[in-house]
Length: 295
Ligand SMILES: NC(=O)c1ccc[n+]([C@@H]2O[C@H](COP(=O)([O-])OP(=O)(O)OC[C@H]3O[C@@H](n4cnc5c(N)ncnc54)[C@H](OP(=O)(O)O)[C@@H]3O)[C@@H](O)[C@H]2O)c1
Image (tube, rainbow, N blue to C red; front, side):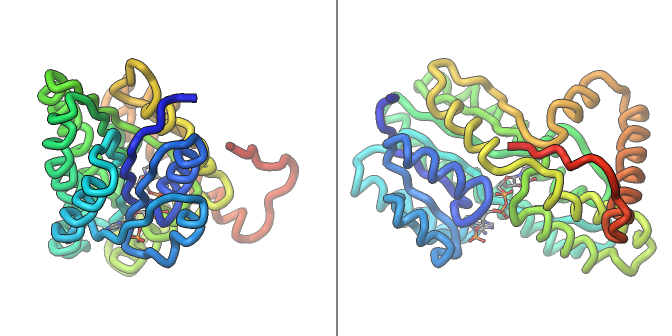
């Protein structure tokens, strides 16, 4: 078994963060799981995970969390910046304050916590930072500009940071999940329909919402990403990027090889196809084959 590490993971109350915290804990690591809803982390506490209440937009809570770990463990080996949500809706419809909040959670929260942890890792001459981006850090869809913007920012910033902290023995990896069955899609769909469901963008909103509504059925389980996280924590030479989950390989390959206009066309076809499928699902008209289950 790999040497136990002291690990802080944000967004541990649900989905990818919860699955990852449990997996890393089961492997014998000392795991701190953090989120706003501590009542959703009683299962983690029961499994031995140290539970911390943080709001990534509230610096005081981040400082307190890092201090707690320093006092209790005198070290911090791995930071996993996982907390985040999808603010969907047409750019014209999403209030600027919501766009700013999306960046506060998905980007500024990540960067502030990283700032707080880096002095500890530098002093140790060792550390690992794992930032959860998305395939949305490389590709794009309509009605998701703020979310895609945050994840593109995480990609570029993580690359820059990887180079600047390497001389101190600190590694930075990026995780790019595809579609994963968590609370994420429901939150994104709700926001999308609230802001753009009855505007000039409503037809697009219905179609993009249809893709999100299919996550419950077709998306991969969070365990797929928890496995990747374990690799990013334990790999002797961690990769700069790991990806897995529904559609991740296809999307990233298409983005790499297609021109922007070709990718636009492919995405439009995918959105229209998903909208048709969701309609059929809705009316219970699907027959035949069982759906492929991702694990
Ligand atoms: N699911 C997907 O298909 C997918 C695909 C690509 C990337 N991702 C990314 O994966 C990461 C994890 O998402 P998930 O899919 O596991 O979604 P999830 O089930 O909604 O979990 C999101 C987590 O983030 C936490 N969080 C949200 N806002 C926070 C805040 N202000 N302060 C502290 N914690 C906060 C939530 O905890 P509280 O609400 O309790 O604070 C929750 O634990 C996100 O960065 C997401 O963008 C997800």
